Length: 466
Image (cartoon, rainbow, N blue to C red; front, side, top):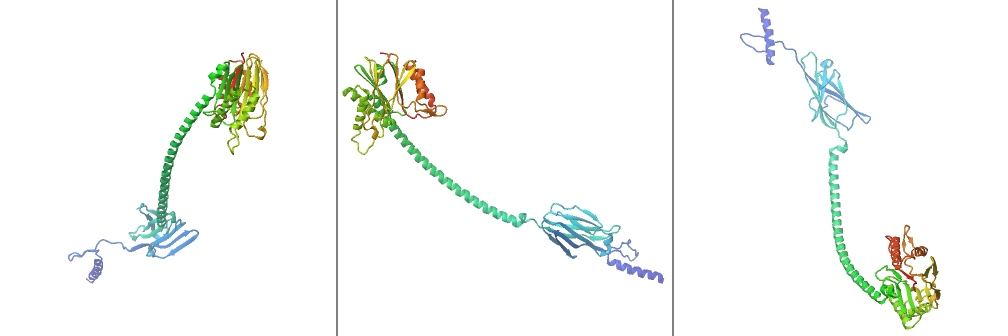
């Protein structure tokens, strides 16, 4: 009885203890014991030591209260020592860990019984390390350990850098916007200025076009006056039928002109090159025509040298009343007189020569190296030479200005020159006079090509048939 009582007492004590932990139910009629329970205890995984390296410097934290660490950007490694409290279970503990990020939730890695782990290549940002442990063969409740890890980002991608980037972008955008606005204003101002200048130029162009039309009309009218005062080609042909005149003015009016007159048995012919061309040359040519008419018709002079001598004097008298003016323009003249009865030719030249082709050879009769009308000390008392030539039937006479020989052109852009001109005349002198005219015109046009005409061109051809 005492044994039973003792057992009951013991059992009652045990029941009373276990009842306090809600492990056994107590019934007055039948007191029974619950199933055997394995002894349980609470364990905790702790991080006892943290070590990391950065730029050959090692940092160590040794404490059981580590809950977060901040690592520098591009650290070399992170070593974490693990332990379980109480320490009785450390020799049997198996560890595993997981790194929890916003993108990675559950990716457990077993490390076995090792009581440390080494981490590298952690990405910048916030992440949580969770370490769990188990004891093989035992139903032991071990709470996992947690460590919050913050890996610093590079300054260039940090929040501060992003803020600086935004501020710099705003500043640069503002500067760019102001620069573009200023440039747009400048372009607008320049555009308006160009519009104003374009309108002004258009007005000036219209004014110049009107003035040019008026000037051109005046020059055309002057050309008609010049043509009316000079002998026409028809009149020339009537006096000397077997002949041609190649006359190509550089401008509308010409400083080169031809002149012909017939008095009884004498035919007077002149090829004149006024040293000025265009309008000044045209005015001088009109004066020259009137002086030639005066000397032959009124004064009755037949000798070419005397005609040029008197022309030189009359030319100075025309401009003698003009004060403070020195004449710089004169005339280069080839002047001849043909006697149809005696078949003689008298010639005098002021710079310009005369070519005579007879029996396929060319004879050059040179003029004096003096111009008519120039106020030069060497020309004040000059006397022109008179040349006499007995003509034969079939002789061809050429009188010309220097425009043909001085024209630039050809493959090298050089002058035509007198030597080439003489060869050309020898090559074509047997042709009819009208064909010679066409041949000369085509030759100088092809030689000139796209180049500008440099001077007035005048060539007169005469064939002796009387």
